[in-house]
Image (cartoon, rainbow, N blue to C red; front, side, top):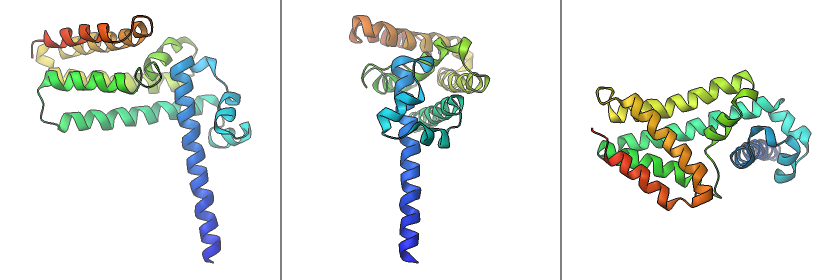
Length: 193
C-alpha cells in the first residue's frame, strides 16, 4: 500500500511540475515573442514533452493563455499587497512597484510585460483572454489609483504611469533602461500626493 501511495504522489508531483513548466514556458514565450508567435510545438520542445501532454492540461491554446494571465495576475496581486503592507510613502510605493515590474520583465532576459505583449495582440486574442487581460490591467490601474488617491486624480495618474512603464519596456530594448527610468522617477517625484 505504501508503494502505491508513493507512486501516486510522484505521478501527481510530476503532473503539477509539468503543468507549471508549461505555464512558465508559455509565459516566457509570450513575453519574448507574443501570443500569436508561439505554438504548442515550441513548448513541447522546451519542456521535453509531447504536444498531447500539453493538450491534456490545456486543451486549447486559449486555455493556456487564460491560465498564464491568471497566474501572472496572482503574482502581481501578491507583490502589490506586499508593497501596500510596507510602511512607505505613496511615492516610494510607486517607485518600488515600477521597479518590481522592470525586474521581472526587462531585467529577466529583456522580456516585455506580459500584459503589454498581449495588448499588442488584442485584436486577435480569444474573448476569454481579452476579459482576463483587462482584469490584469484593471488590477494594476486600481492599485496605483488607490496609492495616489482618487482626490489627487489617481486614475489619470495611474494610466500615465502604466503607459510610461510599458513605453520604457519597449524603448529600453533600443536605448537601454537607465536613461528611461529616470523619466519615471521624475514623473513620480512631481506627483502631488
